[in-house]
Amino acid sequence: MLINKTINLSKTLTLVALAGAVSAASASALADQWRGWNIHPPSYPNSIALESFADEVAEKTEGRIEPKIYHNAVLGDQPDAIEQTRNGALDFANFNMGPMGPIVSATNILSLPFIFKSPDDMYRVMDSEIGDRFADALEEKNLMALSWFGSGARSLYNTDHPVNTPVDVEGLKVRVMNNDLYVQMIDELGGNATPMAYSEVYQSLKTGVIDGAENNYPSYESSGHYEVAKYYSLTEHLILPECLCVAKSSWDTLSAEDQGIVREAAQHAAVEQRQLWKERAETSRQRVLDAGVEINEVEDKAAFQAKMQPIYDDFVAEHPDLESLVEDVQAAQE
Ligand code: GTR
Image 1 (cartoon, rainbow, N blue to C red):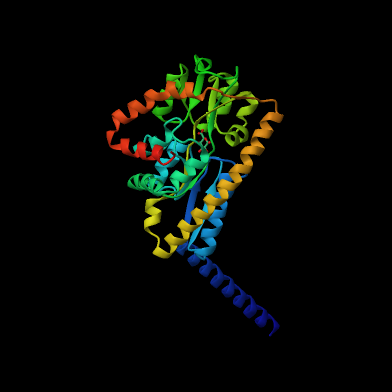
Image 2: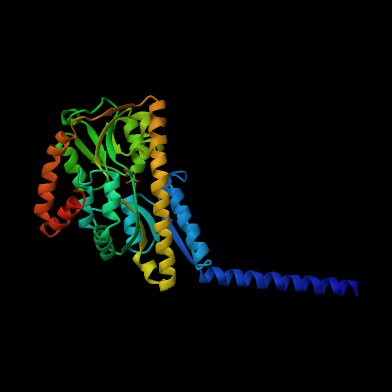
């Protein structure tokens, strides 16, 4: 009797366990497992905001979507990840608009040096109907830009000397993001531009393959570039928006309700990112100063701007259809 009972009990337990496994399996078969790309380490403002996005989406869709973020560009460098998101191999990502230019011509407007007067102007323009026009251009290339993150202002840094005037850039080998516009930008200053993946910059600075690069304080600090390139010069030549983008193929499978949830979560994430960004920019500035970096103000930014004017002229000549959008971005800041 006792033996029988034990057998029955263990059978029952097995059945209960099986039933549990089956229902867990069917729940996760129903759930959309979303893979998200991120270039930055987990403690970076963008990464924290992406995690909040993932949590909010999972919670509010009650597990219908389960986003998971892969930090530190482990799924590929940025140009590659843009392609993967466009073709649906990745579901979402935080992309900088710089390397987007070769795919979505309109976004090159955002890469014109000094197009934004300040990060606040950038936010204001991107949050307006003008930002929607950039989102429309991205959508045509299968990317849904659901909100805009900030990335401060990018400045030049190098291993050799402070940059005060364009002459100081002459002969420097400077890493740029993957975009011909930036090659021209460094050329106009008399330097030699080297397009290169972000992940390769540290080693290249260290071994002298390049002399410098350009980025904002948080990236200059979190990437460790400040350890090897100690002169940071406040040229502030680029103020680039970034998107929280979802693959159109993933977006199109969602119900209207879930699209609403995902869009709202992306907007909440942008609010958080912008706040964290502000704090981190200051922390990073202080960290690099403490590490012995020499930061210099650039008094005559107009000299850099004047040198870079041909970039505007060539861009408009090549894309006459985009001239009015360039003017609208400028006019919105007057
Ligand atoms: C960072 C940006 C990254 C990446 C990187 C780079 O500021 O957030 O998405 O574009 O710069 O220089 O490649």
